[in-house]
Image (tube, rainbow, N blue to C red; front, side, top):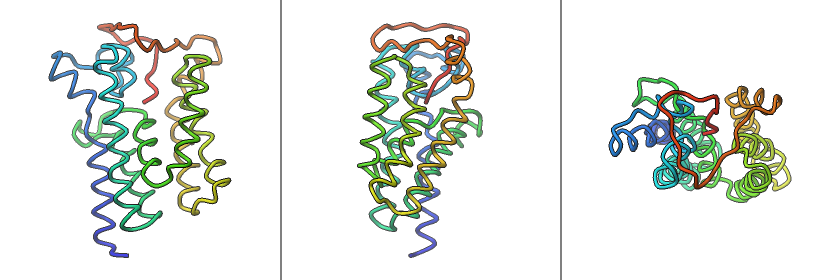
Length: 213
């Protein structure tokens, strides 16, 4: 393994993850600061809630790609260890983006999913199925994200993935759960809002609804 190129891939993962697509898109087209709308999160789900699928879907897709592309390249050229480090770096970049002065970014769910597609697509498929099933039943995006994250490590074990991949899945699940701790409190108290895919709404002030991305 070439240590220098591996380090470059990890750095590239962080830089890709740091691209605040939700913030830039809303600022460019609508002249708004997404951090002052809805939950105040720059991730795709808050953009979706505030401006509808026309804005939210491209942001979600880009957030997936910025985890997928670096992790896939690392997986194909340097193996699973560098791939998971690159994916973790992309997630870190999404959470604390360099291009926003390391201020709070998103909750890493889409970027994590993209990274996993890049180096463990079958595990990613399990996570997507769990997310979709939970979301379709309850329309709670936060709960779907949490349960999908919890499913990753068992799926990786059952699918006989490499040890670095299994460790990544467990660590990613813990990170996603921690970032959703406010959502968990609201879910426990029956105060979490259901996500509406096609209903366009936005607010000038922060709402109680937190963004799962």
